[in-house]
Amino acid sequence: MSEEKIDQGRRKFLVGTTAAVGTIGVVAAAIPLASAMFPNAQSKAAGAPVKVNISDLKPGEQKTVMWRGRPVWIIRRTPEMLNTLEAITPKLRDPNSLVDQQPPYAKNEYRSIKPEFLILVGICTHLGCSPTYRPDKKSIDQRWLGGFYCACHGSKFDLAGRVFKGVPAPINMEVPPYVFLNDNEILIGSSKAENVA
Image 1 (tube, rainbow, N blue to C red):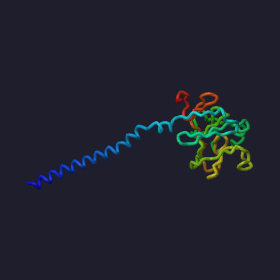
Image 2 (cartoon, rainbow, N blue to C red):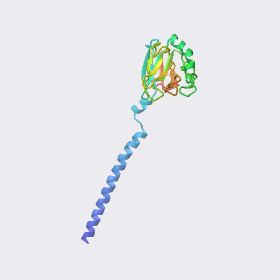
Image 3 (tube, helix red, strand yellow):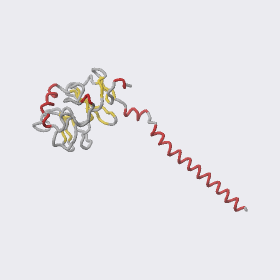
């Protein structure tokens, strides 16, 4: 009879211990799950629209900001740069931006709301490298009129982010959603001014 009492005591101890360890395991697994369902302020801010002051951007200059972990380029194009866009149309793979890489308001020759300002995600559409801004004519070859060059695999884009024929990149560079808040500020990541924090 005393052996039965010992077995019952052990059984109660093992059941209690197992239940306690199981409860701790469930709680430990639930905490990350709950955290993922309710992102913190830093995570929310990473995907939020970014307000950029462009008042100091001179013609021909480039400014880079981060949005959703990706570089976004803002380029203030000169009239001379804008004049090159039509001249190279026959050399482009998708000159009319038929592939959906831009909001509807940027589906034009300039790929922008205001021709003077180009806003692009600074990532090559081939393998995700970051091309360099090469506005100077003949800086790549004798026929180069300016644009973006990805040295990794030789992809070339014009000053509207449109891809040239015969390069590895398959499509034009992405134009993110954006809106002009006024003459000096752009909101990148939203097409509506009321989304300003």
